[in-house]
Image (cartoon, rainbow, N blue to C red; front, side):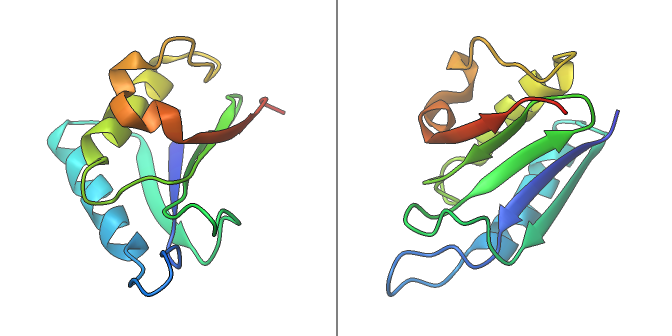
Length: 115
């Protein structure tokens, strides 16, 4: 199954430089180091979570979709990989115990059922 991580490339607090492009590259590298295949990491101009930068989402066919905001590109990379592992291993994308995802579990903004 193919999984997609989308990172907002324009998210930034007032007066700060957007880190989305760099964060997407870091996530790709972290997933590769963890031998997590089947993921595409891309960027998009906006995920409409501007008040709480940085935003990212997870999607896969037949699985719940997740939107996170207030993700810190400088410290949350390992937590993103932990969530990616749980998401990949879930048959329907529903994550019932996200404690392994550290701080990221508190950044969940919303989830959408598989359609």
